[in-house]
Amino acid sequence: MNTGRKDIGYYALNKLASAGAILLLFTVISWLLPEASNRLSSILGKSAPIEHWVYGYALIASLTADAALSLLPPVSRLKQAALYAAAGFLFFSLLESTAGNILWNRGVIGVILLLLYFKGKESFTSQSLITLFFALVVPLLCWTVM
Image 1: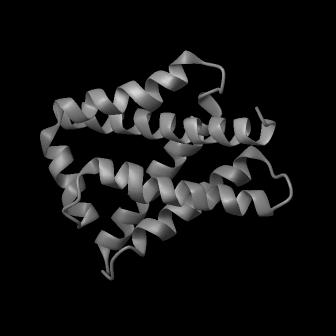
Image 2 (image 1 turned 135 degrees about the vertical axis):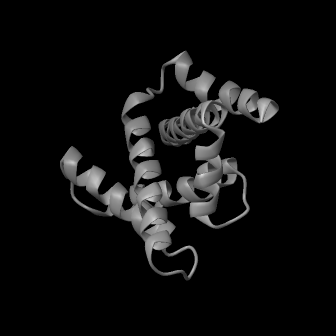
Image 3 (image 1 turned 45 degrees about the vertical axis):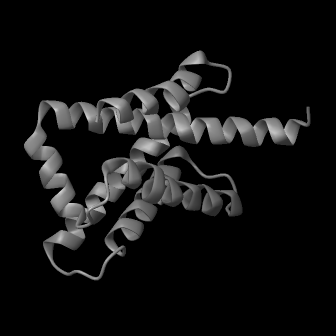
């Protein structure tokens, strides 16, 4: 198999595993604190389920941050995390035209989500069965339970 294709596959698997871990985190939070889940939905301002936020909006913002990092010369881990945080804040705060606290709250949620993707980028390795579990099994379990 072509090494480039393998690398792209591992990259995609890493992103899906990160998304699965984030979805699991939000599923557990919504079980333990249903009022926090309702508050999160009201802050985000859209009636989309949380998996749309994780797999749609945050995943696209994470891919955008990775694309920006690929255009830059190698930078430190702290600068990479700052770029992820900036992408999360900008992407989530500019989703809808609102002003005031909702814009800032939505931006902070975007920062948290993107930093979780950044942590997942470092945590999930390509040769691990845990990565496959979080990429394939965890989302199915979360969606059947929700």
